[in-house]
Length: 260
Image 1 (cartoon, rainbow, N blue to C red):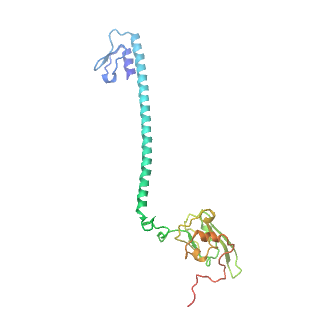
Image 2: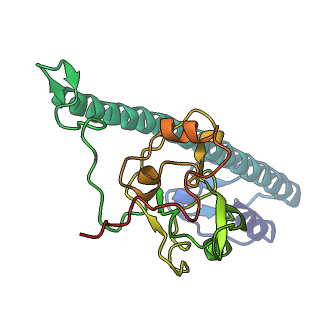
């Protein structure tokens, strides 16, 4: 705006400009309430000086505007940072408060433990009927077809078998499942032609090493492997020292019903 006015004044024309556009008097200009007019005794040199000072004032105004904008941006950034810090602290405090209130609600005076509402692991947690937990495996039925291992998308099932010395088929020496890789998709259950593997309801098999997460169902007691007893880390650790399966083909199966 200032450059346009200066250019028209340099040509000797009178320019009507609202006073709000020029709140300060320029050199050689009469600033009235409603217009800016060129004096009669205004020569070309004075007009050039006025144009120069107008350009200088414009540049200074632009620099001041940018400086103010930068300070305003820095202020917004600082306010946003403090807001994020307050939001994080208040959220963590609220969550810890809910945890503390829930902890105090579960206190049992007689037992002097915080297990009045949630009694796990003393009372097993109820799971849904179609819950996919640790596997159930029947060694006495498995025929060693390896279809479950072929269907596994992460290759976490390891089967070692030899020709059975009794009758036809194979003897399963190792049926291991690596639970550090298993994603409990149950894709190994459907291909089994003899229904010897299922997804169980056990979910709390804990251990202190990766080796404890590799379970060899051929070395576990049959009741544990098939789910008639709870699979536990102690039984898994004891199975690590066995070199032969707990049951071989030709022996009597403990799951067969006796004829009446």
